[in-house]
Length: 479
Image (tube, rainbow, N blue to C red; front, side, top):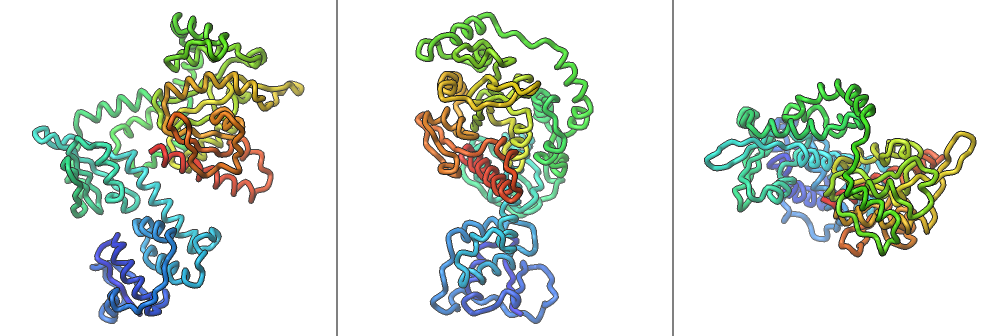
């Protein structure tokens, strides 16, 4: 039995040296035991030292770049299996060079599962770290965080970039991150007692969270998936969540009973003028309020005649990521809000799985009125034609100018036509970043309604995986 003792839990360089040497010596995976220095093992006293890299015979095979991209992420997982799993993959790669492309292989699937969980842990750390003022004299801040996996060092550069002008420390049980305005440094893990308790900033967090909480869009399961309870004890706003959930239905009923807020007379006057002008004559809207009022008064095509109302986009005024769908559906037409029907629910599920917070994105449609035909009492969706897409593009362009996203995602072929100005087949262009004239990146993917229509379960699962992968790509480009 060959026992390898690594220096620390995330010692990727030590693992790589030992793995290459043992692979060259022919030490089979079942004959290797991986542990971290200081851990007691069943074989204490009977193990051999890890062979040094220089002792390995010449002619060792080269591993693919995909493995070298995957392995450092898997190492950050908390599973004790991670070192053995990676060595097993390394052992097999010499005889199976395309192994990592076989998604159904148990070892490959396990490694990618570990990498995804590590990615989610890094995303949660970026989202849920809350700094507290530790020293007014030094203007230094401290945060306590317990990541699901050992991602503190990997995410440290993100915090250094985002809080470049702030001295801070992030304490975790594994590693502590420190930024002194010039460089990052790391020290051993800490205890929660080392972090400050509460400061004045926490009341601001609670006020902010309460103000953005939308009871009409509350989905407790989705919220807890995006903000797992394990993080609540370190979030000042988490104390409000049970009360906000309990009050949600009553607040929603009150919102429904209230009359909609009327836009200012100036906004309506400008909107009515713009809605009737030719695209090259109208004065461009300067705010999302003008866009919303203009969409509701729009007469640039005939779709307004049969629709209940225009449906503008929804989201923050400055979002890094903008999604463009095809058009409002039946429920969106009645609610006046995009993506609230079955396709919207599918969209929300995919965003949650991809780690994309919808509240940080702007969601709109290529066409702002519901195009349909009547079949009995039902209103059946009809695809907008190129003329209707072109007429409505004036509003989409206005939304893009105001929001200024880094990435624009086209959900389906109609949305791609509106964004790129030409036919852009999803099957040909999905999964890649496409440059747009305004320097934003474009991503083309399926419309969520397509996933609802795929009859074959295997095909649906494949399409779902590609859709989620495209959302992850878009979010990574935006970040």
